[in-house]
Length: 569
Image 1: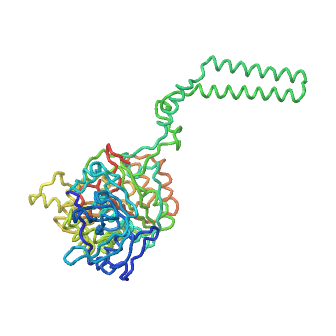
Image 2 (image 1 turned 120 degrees about the vertical axis):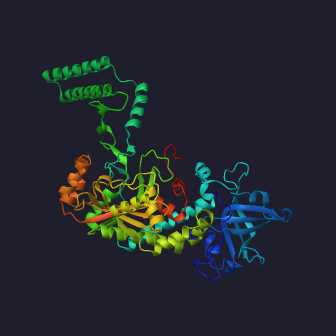
Image 3 (image 1 turned 135 degrees about the horizontal axis):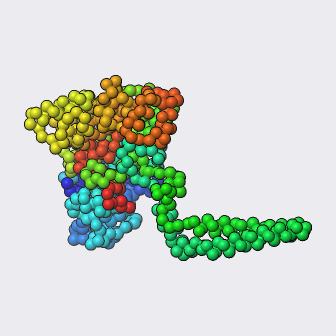
C-alpha cells in the first residue's frame, strides 16, 4: 500500500478540547497545536477572529493568483488533519514556502473560508516568523505516493508522512492505554533488566553482550605500539631487585641510621613493583582470553556470559511473589535470522504477573486488557483510525469494535486440533500438518479466528513438549496450563500461563528440557520460600499495533526497526 498525501478531515465524533472562543497555547511553546484548532467538533470555525501562532511542516503548497499569494497545508504531527494557511507574496518569497517538507512558523488570524470549501477554518498570515527551507530536488520525501518499503530507507524522515505519523500516535495511545489499564487495576510497574544472564525461553537465540572483543582489539593495538617486555628485560629487573635487597641487608648489618635503611627499603619496594608490572605485562597476549581451550568469561565485564533479554517475565515474577500484582513494559531482543513480515530483532513486550491467580484469571485479565485497548483507540484515536481505514485496511475500525464488544471464544488445544482436523477432512489445505502435539502455525490460528469463529479465540492447555519449563503441569501430565489469545489479522497476540509453583515439579521440568539448574537457583528460591500460585502473560506490542492498524509489515509499526542486516540510526 502506498503512502497518501491527503489526510481525512477530522471526525465529528472527536471530543472537543474545549468549545470556548479562545484557543490555548501549548504549555511549553509560543504556538498552538494544530489539533487544538482543526480537532474541534466544529472544525475550528468557532475560533474565527483569533490571532494565533502556528508552526509545522508543509504537506502541500501552491502559489495562486499569478504568484500573489500561496496556499499551504501545514501539519505539526498533533493530528492527521492539516491547517490551511494563506500567505501573501509581500510577507515572504513564496517559492521558499511551498516546497513539501518546508518548516514554517507563522502568526496570523483564523478566518472562516468561503462557502463550498472543505476547510472549516484557515489561517491568514500576518507574519512569517521563521522558515526552515527545503531543496525540492534533493528532499527524499516528496509529495508523491511512496511505498512503506521505500520509507524504511529514510527512517530519520519517514515520520513526516501521514502514515508513519498516524502509526506513531496510535502506538502512543496503545502505550498510554496499557499503563492506564494496569494502573486502574492496582498493578505495580516494575522495570526489569535489559541485560541478563538468564534465558527465559531456553531457546538460545539471544544477543550476547561482551566487552571481550573490544578489550582484545584495544590490547592488540596497545601491544603493537608498546610491545611486552622480553625475558631479558624481566631478568634485568630481577637483578635490580636482588641488588636492592642485598643493599638493605648490608645497611642493617652495618647498623646504619634508620633514615638510610628506610630510603634503601623504599628503593627495594620500587624495584619489586617494577618487576611485578613487567611480569604481569609479559603475560598479556593478543586475542580473546581463553581457559582450557574455551573463552574465559571470568575476564568479561560481568565475569560471566550476559545477553540482551528475550523477556522480563522471570525477573518480574520476583516482584509478583512479594507485592502481588505487577507488570513490565519494555524492549526485548531475539537474534533470530528471520526476514518475515512478523519478526523483529528488537521489539516491545507488555508482561503482567498476578499472584494468587490461576489460568482462568490469566485469561480474564488478557481478554479485559485487549478490549480496553480497542475501546481506548475508538475513544481517543478515531481520527487516526479513520485514516488507516481509508488508506490501508477498510475493516480495521469494525475489527476494533467487534473485539471490544464480543466475548472471546475459549477452547482447549485438543479441541482446536480437532476443529482443524475436521477442516482438513472438509477440504481445507494447510501448509503445516495438523496433528496433536504441533505448535499451531499462524495459518492455523488465523483459520480459527477469521474463518471458524470470526472472533478472538483463547486456546488453552497446550502439550508440555512445545511450551516453556515454567508453565504449570496439568494433572494429565501431558499438558500445561498455558493459553494463547488469537485475534483476526495477526493470529497469536498474547501468550501466557499459570506458572509452576511446586518446587519439585519445576526443578524436574528444568532438568527435563536440558537446562542447567545453577542459573535458575534464584528462580527456584521463589518456590522454596513462600511459594504462591501465580500467572501472567506477554503481549507483543508491535503485534497489537499491526492488529489495530491493518499494516502488513511489523517493520512499519516500530519507529526504528531492527532486523537481520539493518540497525539504522
